[in-house]
Image (cartoon, rainbow, N blue to C red; front, side, top):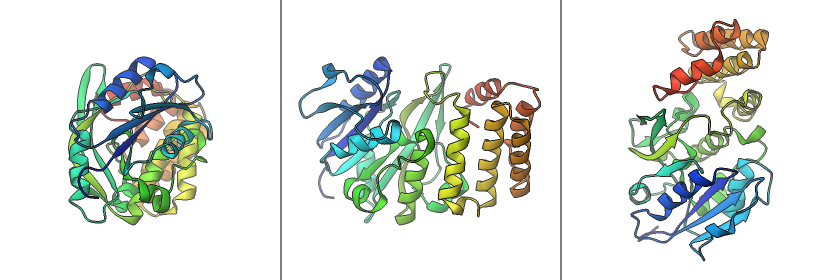
Amino acid sequence: MTGWPSVGVVLPTHDRPGPLRTALAAVLAQDYPGQISAVVVYDRAEPDPRLADGDRVRVAANARTPGLAGARNTGIGLLDTDLVAFCDDDDEWLPRKLRVQVEALQARPGAEFATCGIMVEFDGAGHPRLAGRDEITHADLVRSRMVMVHSSTYLVDAGALAGGIGLVDETIPDSQNEDWDLALRAARRHPLVNVDQPLVRVVWGASSHYAQQWQAKADSLRWMLAHHPELVGSPPGAARIYAQLAFAYACLGRRGQACRWAWRALRSNWHERRVPFALAVAVGIVPGEVVLRRLHAHGHGI
C-alpha cells in the first residue's frame, strides 16, 4: 500500500437505530485523508434508506446466512476498497482510529490485519483494555481470547481477506466468536499489527443482542474447540474455554455439565480464575447475571 488507501467500513445492524447513527457518524468523521465509504447491512430487519448517501454510505439487507457473520460478508461483497474495516452498530470509533492504524500497517511490510485497544464502558464508567504490545501472534490468541482484539477494531487488507484469510465463517453457531475465529486465521499468516491505544469505545450492557444467549455461547465455544484444535493443546487457553463452558451451562441450569467442564478446566490449569464463578452459579450461590455485572463494572467479562 502506498499513499492513503481507500477504506470500506461494514456496519452490521438489527434494531438499534440510535446507536447505529452514532457509530456511522463516528466512522464518517474520521481524521483520515484517504477515501472512506460505509455499508450498513440490516440483518433480519428492514433497511432504512434514509441513511444512504451516494457512494459514501450504502444501505443493504443481509443477502447471505442470517446472523452477524452473513451480514459482515454481505457488506464485504459490496465493497471495492483497499482495506476493509468492521464497526458494530453499538460501538464508536475515536477520530484518530483509522489514520494511526493505516500508518501502523504501512510501517510493517507484509502486514495484513490491524487491531487497536478499546475503552470498555459500563454503567457510565470507562475501562481501557490494552494488549501491552504492538503485535499479536497466533500463540497469543490461542492462549487468550484477548478482549481488546475486538471486531470493531479490525482493519484488514481486502486482497488478503478475499484470497488468503477468508471471509467470516457463517457456520459458527449464532455467529458468536466469529471475530476470534477470523483473527486466529489471520494471525496464522502474519502477526496482527496492534495500535496499543484505546481508539474504539465499546459499550457493555443489556443492549447486546448476545448478552444472555448461554446456549449459543456454549455451542460456539465447542465449535471453536472443534475447528481450532490448537486451543486444546494450550493448557491455559483450553482451561479458559472449559471454564467459560462451565459458566454457560451453569447459567442454563445444567449443573452436571457445568461441574464436568469446571473439572476439565482445573485439570488443564488449576489457576483458572473463572472456575469459582462457574461453580458458584452452578450450586445456586449467586445468579450468573450478578457475576457478569460485577465483572463488567471492572471492565472484564467471563
